[in-house]
Length: 357
Image 1 (tube, rainbow, N blue to C red):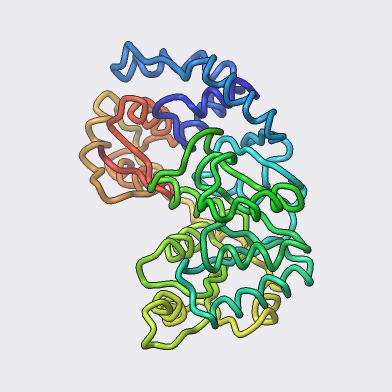
Image 2: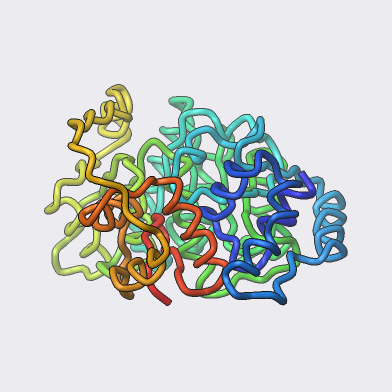
């Protein structure tokens, strides 16, 4: 566990690189030992993994708070979240972690919610909890707060943007304490870290990743809740929305989702009807393709950089583009991408898309 935590906190090791290093080297200890050599091959001779003392301080703070470490690939890690391409390598959890593998629905929406939206959220949170569904949200003001509070008796999961000891917003400190005691509090960030702007979109992918479905109660067209909805679509989750008045900008995002095919929610029965269906349809098998001749990999990194841009591209698509001129193994591409990520030449965006840095 220590090695995996240290590996995840090391510079330029994101979720995809973490997965690849563990897969290639078998465990955290070997992956951590290989990390400086991989970075050196990528041109960074001064690379060092995260300091051991820093990791020990993080673990000490977690023990003081009664938090449990969940690591990707180990028992106890949320099964549904583990399916997500950019699932967090590590999570700190307080409370009842058994909730993480129960049927969960995310309820999200605007911080500046209307009275009607808050009434709707209160009813949905209560009724979902009564139906045995765990309500997931992000502990923000407005819709998130009411969703947690109304589901607290039945079960709720709060995903924090910062460390579990850095409650945001501060006014939700008491609610966060109750969730940690009676529900489950979750964060991928270290203890002591106050949330920054970039941490909130990262949190949203966890909210949707834990859930079978995401319900947007009220949200503007450009909002964090819409980011959560996009994450849910990328992850193959159901997206649902409560309709709003077309003259109210706070409902524009929900109305856009409904226009684009989201399930309309009038009450909890609309959600339960969807959950009664299979939420994970089988993947369609791909037809076998003729195998082109192997391609030399000495200029592979240059070709990767040529194909990439600031617009994210999926790794599967990149593999297809590279193979157009000759076959290349997915494992070979993965190894080169690991080195390029550590060298800072390539980055990944939420959802796993690759960009040129």
